[in-house]
Image (cartoon, rainbow, N blue to C red; front, top):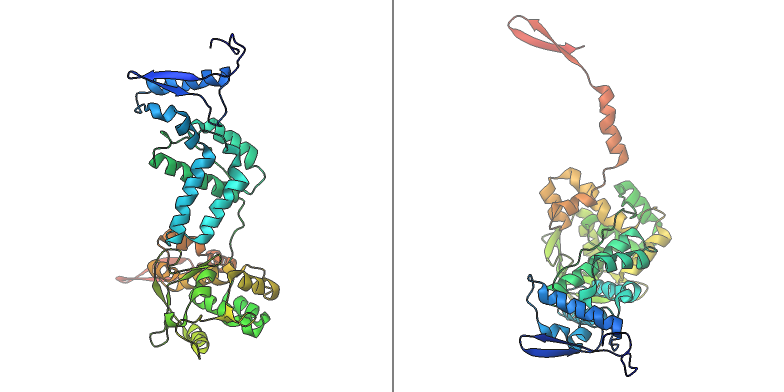
Length: 375
């Protein structure tokens, strides 16, 4: 057709392009709609540009109706989530992480529905950022953007897109700074808790276990003779995983208090039973339950994760060298341990206070030797 309407009055168009002696028809756009004149011209222009692009091998099948439909954003992201679900079932991905990235689609990514993924460029991504991410926290924006970037990497690795688009940067940081508390503050908060809930929370304070790891510890993972607990499992959402966040299984030493708590809680239990039983349910603890107990009773002013793992790190770092602290925290990277260490303000004050308490020394000659005396 040479105009928006055919001589017969029909407004529908189709494109036929030729490549190496064969003709290939294309009738529908990426949304599955039959071409009108404007969309047909746009499609033909893209096909010609792809033919002339010498950096990528042209494949005529990429421009057929079937291929274009397969490249629609909503179809490919469902394939991606299917692969992630398989990784979750085989233990490669935590159920909680899978749940989060699935929710990103319905909450943030439906903007791209109907797009051919090869048409999503920097301009489209910038419009998406402006329209769909303005009303969420900066930290959430970054997580949503990074998850989308991971999806595009998956598409590139699998040949669904030929180039990685440039993603808009998300600047700023509105995350709440983490804090740590001293041992005295921990003990005061523990006294506020009902006695039946103190052991699991104090055990986290003395071992640095994550809440999901604490909930999954079995009796058989406790070695009282060697004073260690093996961190081998974790609770992600409502699913127990036979691995940990860093996919490592390591022993954590038990100091006197942690050993006392462990010994008290293994009594009368089978090896496959939970080390800590919630007296309110008669079953293992859940993370949200521990969190709710802490919020309701502790009166500490800090979150449970800050009062346990962050405070544990802050207390052990000054007592040892950096690699031992990293090992106790079970971090793969020392920078992660650095992020968990929070120097107490009063400790820093003591450091700078010494600036005004320095004794200047002067040298005085005396015989063949030299003495120093306060100025």
